[in-house]
Image 1 (tube, rainbow, N blue to C red):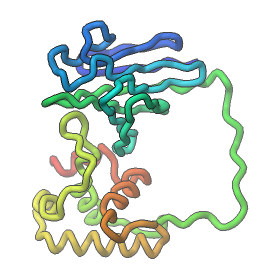
Image 2 (image 1 turned 135 degrees about the horizontal axis):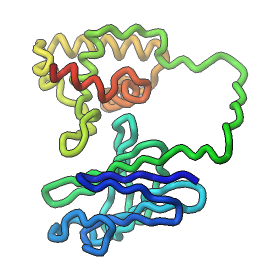
Image 3 (image 1 turned 90 degrees about the vertical axis):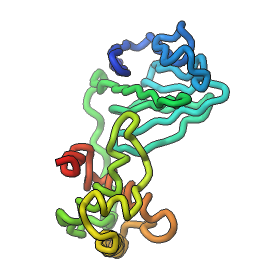
Image 4 (image 1 turned 90 degrees about the horizontal axis):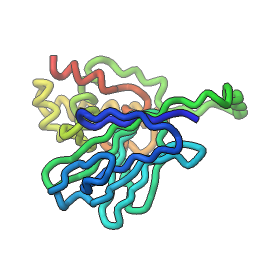
Amino acid sequence: MADVHVECGELSRTLAPGETFTFGRAPSCSLCLDADDVAISRLAGRIEHDGHGWWVVNASTSRQLATVDEFGLRSVLPPGRRIAVEGTARVLVEGAEITHQLTVTAAQDVSAGAAAKPRIPEGLPTSMGESVMINPADRAALIALFAGYLEEGNRYDPYPKSYAAAAARLGLPRTTLVKRIEYLRARLTAAGVPNLTGPNALANLAEYALTTGVISRSDLALLRG
């Protein structure tokens, strides 16, 4: 069974199965986030191994946690619920003024040997936009719109930027950026990518761009250069 590594600020801790790591407002926690911030639960959460894998558990009875996956996508973890740790995940604990971030990385368990090769289903492969060419101008537009997903800590913002803000960051007229994104959405829709129209079109485009690797955290350097 593999270990898990936890980082938060200057804290860096590796846990073995059988160990439990707690975090919250109480000084008795493994990590006391802020003893004076009553917006944080006394026991906000814990990281534990159940004999099969590592889990982040929301131990609060009243406050939600949030987790951010390797792509930058945020999920709410309600009180009493847990989520499996696969690879690296960030856990966000919101205080009155500061959001605390824990980075949890589970090592790969190789004790069971290589996994069996999955059986390839019959039929035509799923079409999800692979044929659409995304040029550097398209990528720059996506990075500017979805930069908040790629940030860490207090700069993390899992919502698309406004067209005006993204265009200003690129030094373009707003109408130019809007037309570029609309044309890209139309091409992806024609190539089989669903849900790129309607009120949630930009959020769904963000999920597509992040999970397929069209943009990644390393692309932030392009905006800062």
